[in-house]
Image (cartoon, rainbow, N blue to C red; front, side):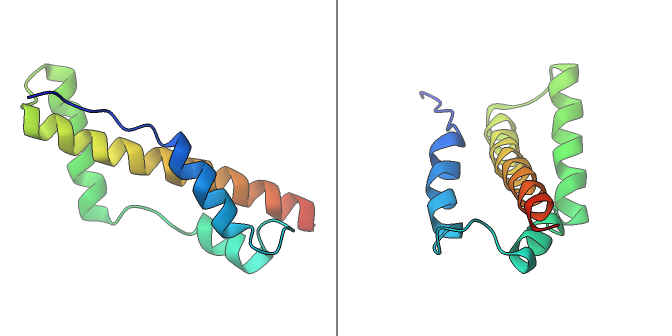
Length: 92
């Protein structure tokens, strides 16, 4: 079975259009909300467990796919939190 790795870049580009509906960038309340987002504790623990197994070389293929999902979401979250920080800097 072929595995597919999905880049977060196209998603980030489209979400950029969604969050910038007014053409002025992120509003302060939206930027602050984005900065408060994080994985629930149980998911953060699962991602850490999968990373540990990957480092040990014991990750199964389904676990590898699961870890890739966590990585893609983490990439998107990091991107949007950077954009939120930039927006708040502009608003200050």
